[in-house]
Length: 240
Image (tube, rainbow, N blue to C red):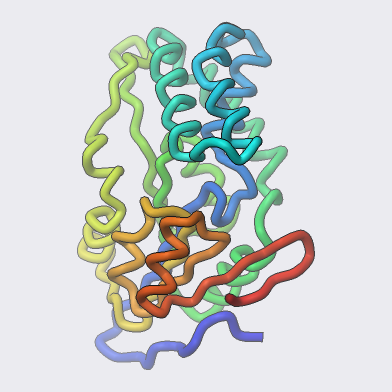
């Protein structure tokens, strides 16, 4: 079974790009949420940090709130409690999560990644989760390049609590265009997969955009523009 409409013809020698969001698109959770939960469980971050996002979490789980509000509060709690922590300690826990949960992926996107890799695509991952966990997870899945949010560390190897180039990573289309130029890629035959509005800018650039398990905002945009929309529910995958 082929997951994509066509394979681009060999032309100027440039590899076509396939760009994926990670959280909720490939990984059946959020790498950041998994990391924060584990850091709290290990006592690296105080238990009180949960109070900063648990109400938004419950609202989202009860379908009374927005996921974007929930994840923003998780990010805020992470940044607030990250300052001063040794990079190595946090990275080690991130490594544990990758090792334990690298196979917790959606079947559709997992198989699509395998097909595109076999066809010679350059696989690019762009995520708002921390770069040090995105890189490891993406590597395990065979991605060629990955981008994530970069949290600064000082000379002592401890997190400063600051983000580097936050405005860049929040603009996924800019990251995609940067990667294409840097890696010598082409948008001819390109594929993109995402699940929320934050992925729209990068999906607008590719020839074959796929809205996968989309939230309301992305679903509406996809329907208005005739994009392929795929839903994976339990053991059923279908197009709507």
